[in-house]
Image (tube, rainbow, N blue to C red):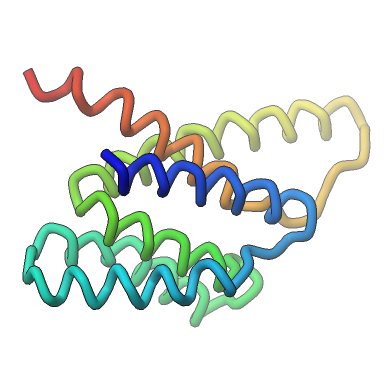
Length: 143
């Protein structure tokens, strides 16, 4: 419970900095990522280590097309995966995708009305929405 609460706070702060400055600060993500990875390797709980899979997929996307996703987003997703495990991380990815689709639909409607919008969208706010939604939805799925 403490880990997920701290994770939500980290995601909220990362969302703020990603929207305002278009960066997720390394001074938070690097130490936290190293601590969580060391702790999960020490515990040898495979579900938490498998939680790194979405971050690995984002890294492959970054490697193919660096403009498509930022490195801070990859590290934040690795922290999420190491914190909550593969099951909740996959739910987070699905909820994040739904939130992104809703926002992109909104942007498409604005473009139809001939207003200028453009540029890359920050991913951290959608990760945060996905994480919070996953944390609220998952207890209802485990019937």
